[in-house]
Length: 365
Image (cartoon, rainbow, N blue to C red; front, side, top):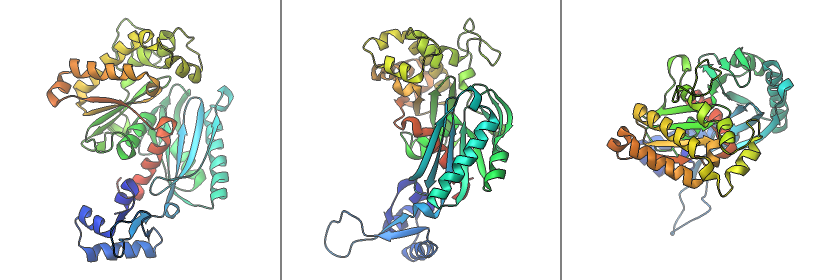
């Protein structure tokens, strides 16, 4: 019941009984117990229709169970306290530079900022979720490698949980983007979906049969290192022609005639110019080629483009979807894979980190 209220919001007791397949007496006992424990509350709906006594809405009390969400990126860190039901109760963020990007600096700042935020909110956390742009070992939160942060074998989960005093779960950023989209975004209701995001690198998260695909020890989704151009540019991973060298942030900047070190804001602004579609032709073709491979291997009903890809012109996204459906055997056989852009903006990883933290709290992990 808490999972239902957390994801889909308030509902009447009658609706809960129908959706969960329970009789009214059982629903009453469960709701009364949760109200007594202070986890949910009941209230009269704002919009009423018909005569007679209105049905009360059962809704989660956001402050009854709250988690910490942390989004670590190459250029900034954001933290948020998220209550059950998905409401952000407080947040903070700061920029990263070369001298503040070391693991010790980032971890210390996260700990200090979290303590300040929790003191302001007067709340205790039940768990935390952390998004990192790298390869993460799921069971203990070891960041095996986060190349764009220059991190190697950082025990992020252990260090944060030891300092904060509550469980900390760490995940790859694209994996958590997929989780956010599946629980609260455009992939809600999709049984099989792929989330592909572009920052300096390119990452992917997979939803398979309604659940996140997490791979051996949590290592999955490194689609950015799928080789699509054997004669392409060298990649930091040791290979050449990896997908991210053809469609990542630096590749987009090159296609637009900009320096590879151009700030993200400048790149986004250039993507909005009238001739951006024509200048992006090579990036678009490589993006289509990679997505066709992804769709042929994984067979998703939906592909969600995230992060920098959300700034692509609408005509480019439409063209990519048409080409993937035309050129993918699996997409044609399945009736057509949809390609859409995320609508979450910069908060997608925070939302995914919060949902990662809520999974064990709600008995889902």
